[in-house]
Every structure is written in structure tokens, then in C-alpha cells.
Amino acid sequence: MPAWLTTLSYISLALGIGSALGIGSALVIVVDIVRGNRQHMAIMNAVWPLTALYSGPIALWAYFTVGRQGMRSKPFWQSVALASTHCGAGCTLGDIVAEGILLSFFTLTLFGRAMYGAWAVDYGVAFAFGIAFQYFSIVPMKKLSPGKGLVAALKADTLSLTAWQVGMYGWMAIATFVIFGRELDKSGPVFWFMMQIAMLGGFATSYPVNWWLVLSGVKEQM
Image (cartoon, rainbow, N blue to C red; front, side, top):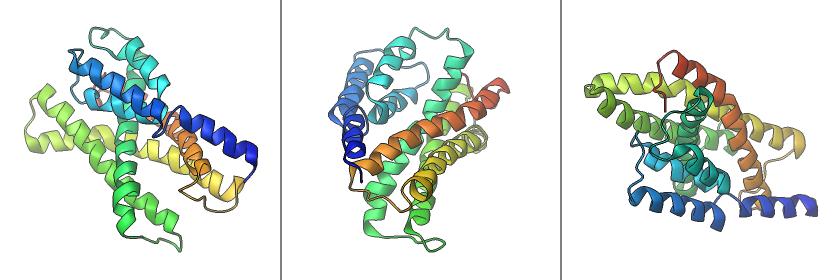
């Protein structure tokens, strides 16, 4: 691995995923929420800290710029961006649980590659978290029954979360098969640097889907 890429990876990771700045940014947001600046949509109280875990100071800036309670009148594009971060939070939590816990105990191989198996597990766990996030947002807001709430959550989050995962896995496939020609070591900084870029890819692919979902009323405007 080129020394410059390893150095760049360390620098980028210092600003985001699992770093002091990422965790610190999440803690700042948590403290601000606990002090009384709760989100109009309750689930965003969890989404914002999770977003900060992978994007660090960027999430902190976005939170204090457009995310705090009282700043509810937003341009449509900002509401769509917030809806997209909702997907990213589910994916982040899913990756933490899947990669950090589940895949530590067993390995799933699909089509001859453990990477494909890990993607399947990641997607399943992220999907479960994403639907749960939507469920506990929609049911209290619209006062739906559990059954109708689950259907509404599935309609709101299935496409958007899948679109996010397509962007993530798409970039990781490019990194694996085109850039490096091999699977990257998950204990190394370059893998997690690629994951940071993959999260941006997920945001990019989910944004137009969330635009349509919010515009059509399938997903609530945030």
C-alpha cells in the first residue's frame, strides 16, 4: 500500500469514523440535545449523533446550522438532505453491529467471497434499524396502528436505505476490484478511508431517491 495513501487515510480517519473528533462531535450533539434542544422528529435525536460518528465536524456544522430545534423552516433541498442522513444513520448502526459484533462470531460466504456475505449481513441489519427508525417516527406523528405503521415505514425507508447501500457497495466494489484488485484488510486504515468515501457515495445515491419520496409524500419532510 503506498505510504501517501496510508498517511491520507489516517488524516481522514482522524476527522471522522470512530476517531476522537467523530466521537467528540457526536458527544457535543448529544449534550446539546439533552440540554433541551430536542428535535421536532424524535428519531433525529439519534440520527444526528450517528451521523457525526462518520462525518465528524461536518455533521457538527450541519447540526448547528440547520438541525437544531427552532430551525424548522428549511429549503426543500435541506429537508431532503436530512432525510438522507436518516438512511445513513441506519447504515452506520447496522455496520457497527454487523461488522463489530455479528461477523466476529461467524463468517458468511456468498458466491465464493466473504465480502459478499458481509454485505448481505450488513444490509439486513441496516434495513432492520432503518425500518425501526422510520416506524418510531411515523407512528407517533400520524397516530397509526402498529400494522399500518410498519407498512408506512417499509414504504418510506426500503427504497432510500437500499439506494444508500447501492452507493456504499458500489464504491467498495470499485475500490476492491478496480483500484486495488483485492479485498482490503479491515484492520488497516485504507479500508476505513474507503468506507468514508463509500458513505459519501451512499449519500449521493440516496439523495435523489429521498427527493422523490419526500416530494411524493411517501416520506415525511424533516
